[in-house]
Image (cartoon, rainbow, N blue to C red; front, top):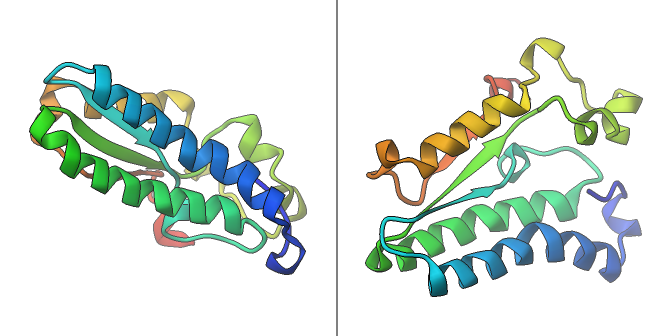
Length: 152
């Protein structure tokens, strides 16, 4: 994430975030489509910032919104290949990324500790989307945030 107002962002700031958060997923999906067998599943990790965001994180929010759109496009193209493509949109997860966020540290973004998930919560959602139990789920954007999005 880059924490700058829009007026202060440079092209390099945008490229740094988009290269990782969007293009990284694109290149993975592209290679997966070339190598993955029928019945495979891809789960992209976006963010609730794709839906609701905060000041000074425009490149991150835009990349995650674009990743949700990429997931839908990939689901359409993956279906004839027998490959499912979905995304999870995590909310606050107990990781250094959350607690080192300057907006959280400064109080610009309020985090109710009761609405902070564990990495295992996110892993369980990803495991479900990758499993045969989710064989009829295609192109979904699953919000995994303990209800936090409803409070932003």
